[in-house]
Amino acid sequence: MATFDHCLKKIQEDSSIALECLSLLQAALSRNSTAPLRDCEGKTALFKKSEAELTESITRLAKENQTYRAYLSIPPLLLRIGEQIERLCEIVNKKISDDILFSDRAISELSTLFDKLKEALKSTSDLLATKNPVLIKHITECENDIAVKALEYGTQHEERLIEGLCLTIASPLFLNILNSVRCIAWDAKEIALKFKVS
Image (cartoon, rainbow, N blue to C red; front, side):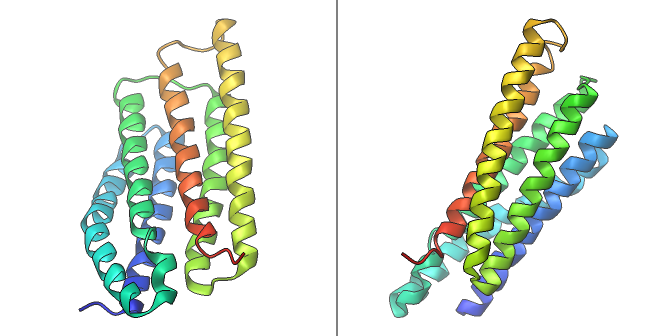
């Protein structure tokens, strides 16, 4: 039977894996190489494996100790992050395999978002270990910043598309990446808010 410390350690490991995967995705995009994606795909399989077991263990532990209730929804949120990372792998793989080019500006915008998202996930992992309320505020601000920037980048991209400055074949891929990044940031914020004291 898993102890709470074991569950917490597994949650932190999954959070660290998500962070590693984002770095691998960013490397795949900037280098236009599928090699980092293979590492990422292997890692995301670990999310699916652990979610059901973690949820069951935390549910049992929360019945015995109410303080663990805050952790009940974290495994499903981490699973959703893992699913979005898998989706990003598919999109980036298609971009590279089909030789679809993004402009330097699009790559730069995505790099900015990935950096901010990695910052949010690093803070989420730290929050799980420390429960520091300052991190909750920081994660919430990161999510808001990502949402605002993603919307701005999407709008500017559509304007460039109308002007004929972007390839139409690249457009859905770019917009889908923006959407997945927003979803991951949202889930990181949802994890953080579990620790917010009213």
